[in-house]
Figure (tube, rainbow, N blue to C red):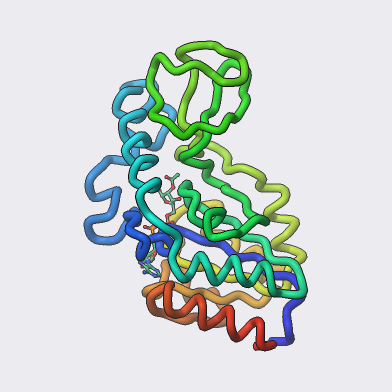
Length: 235
Ligand code: OAD
């Protein structure tokens, strides 16, 4: 491919795995221990809010203890040193991309360090445990705060901006995602329909690996810094 001018990077749980954050669908992943219907749907939250608060409190505390790895660092370096535009769209709710230094970043599935108020609909920074009696920092209402996570059946954030960026980039990288969850799993088709060159970087071939123009398989901390070096050297 020609030297790209604009790069869109989709990341998933695999990029944070070597930092010590569990993935979802690998052996011993989060969905082998929890039923997603209990902790990642509005219906599960309505049924048992305490279980859901506890689940995200545990994950928020866990992420505070880990650090960005060489793959996060490499993507932050790419954003700093690349002459064109770099946009990261992450499905991850951890904050490892921003802690590594990435700034042009969309958390399409929400963020662990954010609270969503069902009364005023404000999204507020939230670093502590959350519980039924927590008050919204914006309107002060108690009892209507939820983790600011996009659950199954809900619409991910900033989809218009993501589709516009996908249609207008010339390189799409998909890093550390199994390609099981839509709409993110459909980004590769959307990009290809707009003549974007598409590359998968993942531990193993994902669900939709055959749709990509190229694929590189291995651990993110190895293959992502190597690929970033290639881009910065002109591919
Ligand atoms: P998955 O757990 O489905 O997939 C993680 C992918 O990362 C797998 O394909 C692994 O092979 C790969 N992987 C594991 N370790 C890796 C490493 N060291 N280097 C590179 N790749 C590695 O996670 P996601 O695809 O992110 O949504 O899952 C998508 C969504 O499903 C999540 O955002 C979450 C989940 O349900 C919600 O909770 C709404």
